[in-house]
Length: 420
Image (cartoon, rainbow, N blue to C red; front, side, top):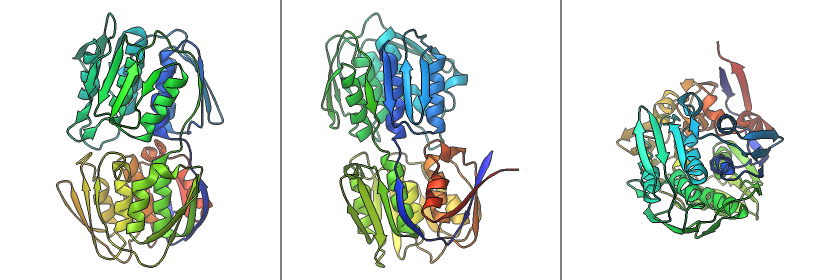
């Protein structure tokens, strides 16, 4: 098992290229199960979560080829059962339910695992499948879906903490081969949902309204193969912008889509940083006037929960008192205890973190608890005194492609070593 050693105090400067979106690629790869024909997906990031998804698709009978960020998949003959030992490592494996139900009208998939950031139920997914006409049974840790046929329906997917992104994608993938028209109310508006809709449309699906809370899917009899390029990863982009804020003189992210980063860019400007952008780049530089923030995570286009931990790391070393409120995953503050080991002054009450900025953090042994918490610890270590040892970095490899190499390319000093 690897660990990362971050030697703090190095200044970052330069350009870094953003990879394809993990949260977009996973459901798009699952959607290739909807056709017997070959699909070619470009800009697929090299991540452990992607590896798990391709393993799942292979276990279902799909032929998978991968080279230099391009994945070719032909799912001519598939089975409909995915056991626990295959899906247990990744929560996003639940997104194979929609394609299996849509194409084969049957699925048996074990309840998945994933990172530990609180309860993330899939009841809204199952509610949507039932509305389309499927019989849903959960028994012995397995989900059983069966339908003689699927019929379009009106489905509301808004949950207690907002819309469900994976749920919206799952229902879209099932409904695209259902009879009649399906209307999703309370749909997630994230760019990843729009990207999936573009791929399904390229396959012959009929979808309108993606990117709004009202999506309409007119079912078709079958889908065909298609080529698709995955959108840039907006969370990776945001993470490198925060790296530039914490330890940079000038950092430019390239091959990105600035319109997907509106809330993050706004928050960084509010905190006193200079940002400029072109059609596919964003540059951040400090101006010496850092200010505390009051942030609240809300679904897109609001401030993303997947950037909350990184901003906590940044705010921990900024003058004044900041308040961060987590409304999407209220228990998503496991990074706070590790930041405090580095000298951060943070009070955590329920889903509110009050952060009193300190002059400097100090390197310390810390433990990564989930994907975004891992990134936050790396960011916090960049300007810290001494060396920070980050253990259990397999979390970070789930969602960041060569983050250590990319940061070193900007001037950081990061080593990846084998843990004893």
